[in-house]
Image 1 (spheres, helix red, strand yellow):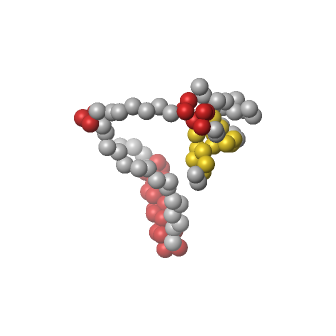
Image 2 (cartoon, one colour; image 1 turned 90 degrees about the vertical axis):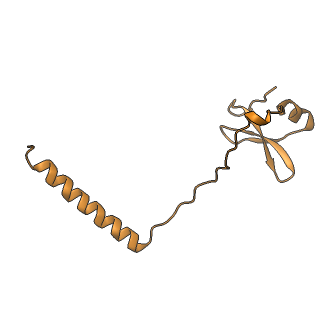
Image 3 (spheres, helix red, strand yellow; image 1 turned 180 degrees about the horizontal axis):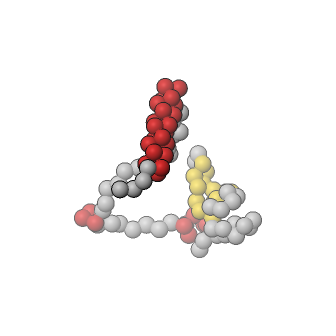
Length: 95
């Protein structure tokens, strides 16, 4: 049976922090320590046949990459050229 958050009513999902397992609300982040009895209700286990398994890769969190000053200058020039070309195309009469 799924537990619901006492604050906002959102569903609580198991969340492992270190060796301790908590139930955390997916809406507001409220956390409460989970006991073994509660965790048994959250476990779903089944075996997928070998021929039906799909191999996937693990998604990682994206890093924010900062532009170097040279890259910023190149990008600025690119936008200026693009805007000039776009303006010329919109001003010239269609043939």
